[in-house]
Length: 283
View: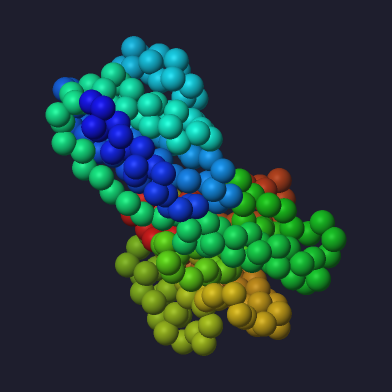
């Protein structure tokens, strides 16, 4: 056990800021891991635990005694002293995950640096979009929804401006979306109409959310280097095109426009799912 504990301390001490090391073990009744990353300032370490099947009540109580709190990602603790942290990790491996002293450790190394940098860029992008929308729209015209996206009504539709980060290492994008029709029954004729319409458009595309019976119009900006004029043009195109087609779609294929004048109270309704956010999607 002493050899394993000393090995753990060596691995922890070697971590650079934002680097992490994960110790994976096959314990008596479950697979488990302890992941530790060094904070950006290098002054402390953050450890969290995972296990499959989930840890029983007794194990969670043991973690509480070791100073772990419960967070969304699982039990976690922040420790400044590497020696104390090595003792804690060994206690978790031996007593909580029930990995005997001779149990092999599967050790994985990595870094959160790219994730942190991407989140910084995303924050800066949100701040820029706030200024652009302040200049583009009247005061108080937009709001922030539960997903953190900017949204505002436009005639009989509603527009969303959604900054997104592609998978780690990928660029940022700005998705500009408008829901045109809801309560619409999907049909081959509707699908054919949307496809033919997309073929003739220079900017943007229509998409059909068959599960939630909704039609959307969208266009994306890639990266962070777009101009203010490009952004304003894109928001205008998406809003105008969605408002131009929604009545036509409702007249031919049924359903209703999203924000009809005679049902103003429903203008604040929220679509159950935006394009690109389904499980398994890359956004």
